[in-house]
Length: 341
Image 1: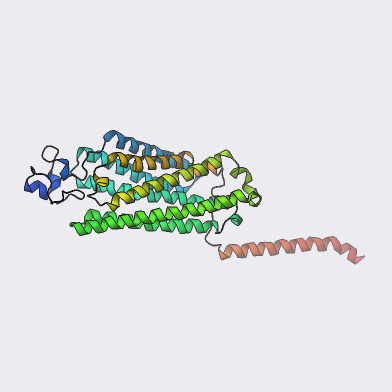
Image 2: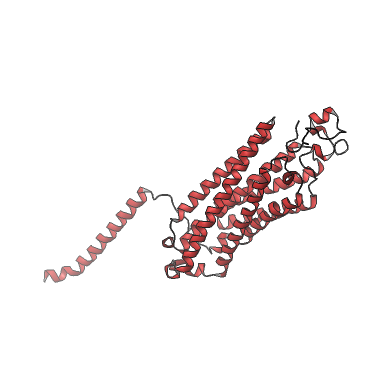
C-alpha cells in the first residue's frame, strides 16, 4: 500500500478497485480509481495554489534584490530558503491536482510546506537583537546577542525535528513508521509554537520597557527609531509573527488528527486560509517592510560579535598607551623652556 494518508476504517478503499491497484495506488489514474485511493479526498485547486506559488516567487526576487543591495546575508538566506520551499510545496499541490495518486508529489508538498516557516521565523529572530541594540541594551533584561542565539537555536531544533519526521514518514513502509514520522513533525511544530510564544513575551516585555523609559533610548539612533519607516517595520514584524503563529497552531491541530484525519484529507478551504494566506501575509510583509531599509543604513552597525579577538584588544591597548605617551611628550615640550629659565 503506497497511500500515506487515507483509508476507510475497514481497511478497504472502494468496492470497484481491483487487488493490484489496492496494493499499489501509484498505478491508479482518475479513470481507474476514485479519490479514496489518493492522499486527499479532494483535488487541490490549480488557481489558488499557483497564485500562492507566484506570490512567493515574486518575494524571492524582492529578497534577492534587497539582500544583495544591503548585504543582509543572514536574513536573505533564511528568507529565500523558506520561500523556495513554499514555491516547491505549492507547485507540488498543483501537480497533485493532475496526479492525485502520485505519492512523490504528496511527500514534496508535505515536507516543504511543513518546514518552510521555520526558516522564515529564523529571519524574524535575527531582527530582535538589532532592535534591542538601536533602542539600547540598557532597556533589556538580556544582551542583544542573547535573543538571537537562543531563538535561532530553538528554531534549528524545530527545523531538525520537522525535517527528520518528514524524512521518516516519506521512507517508511509500514503504519508505525509513518506514525513515528508524523509524531516527530508534530513535535517540531509544537516546539516552534512554544518558541514563538516565548519570543512574543520577550519582544512584548522589551516593547513595554521602551515605551515606559523614553529617556533611556540610545540617542545615537533616536532619529531612526522615531521614523515612520522604522515604526512600520516593527508593525510588520509583529504581523508576520502573529500570522506564522496562527499557521503553526493550525498545522499542529491538522497533524494531531493524523494523516487520515478529516482536517488533513478533506478541508482544503481551511488549509488555503490558515496555511497559505497566513504565510503569504508574513512573507509579503517581511519583503515590503525589509529590515535593512527600515534600519536606514545601520543594519550591520547594529550587529553583535560573540567575542572580541585578543589581538584587537592588544592593538587598542597599545594605541591608547601610544596616544597617552604622545600627549605627555607634547606637554613636556611645552613646559621645558620654563624649566630651563
